[in-house]
Image 1 (tube, one colour):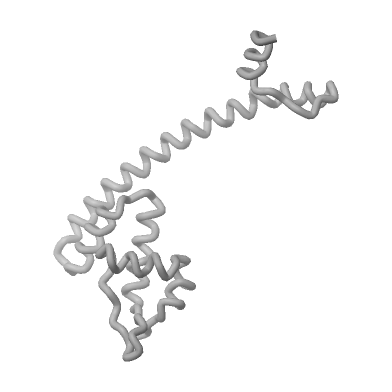
Image 2 (image 1 turned 90 degrees about the vertical axis):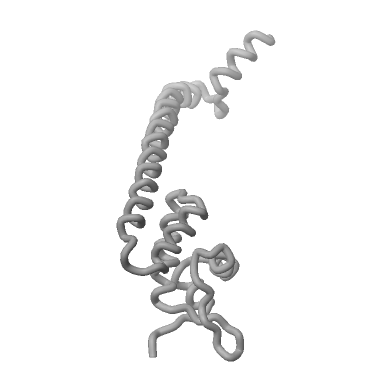
Length: 144
């Protein structure tokens, strides 16, 4: 007999909620698992593997439609590996592009942190506990 998992066990293994696992079924991301006589779902190791990869695809920003496409290709079995690879390569390029943008955005945040270092140090030296954004400070001087 192959190993199977209850929905509670899948929640523990995947970190997803039971609601999300049920949504994956309704959305066509995974095949609805067989049920026991009492109606409880029994997931297989193959379900666990698919859910694991789908979780990674989602975490990297793949839309549900892309996840659905990938899952459908996998369920079709051997013979469409080139299509699966193409889908994953396209997604990889999108992830890399977002990473590049995040790096650029992080560089701006880092520059701002460095910009405020002397301001916060001089405020501490002067006994002030509050620092003001340069834009706010310039507006205050205009208003005053």
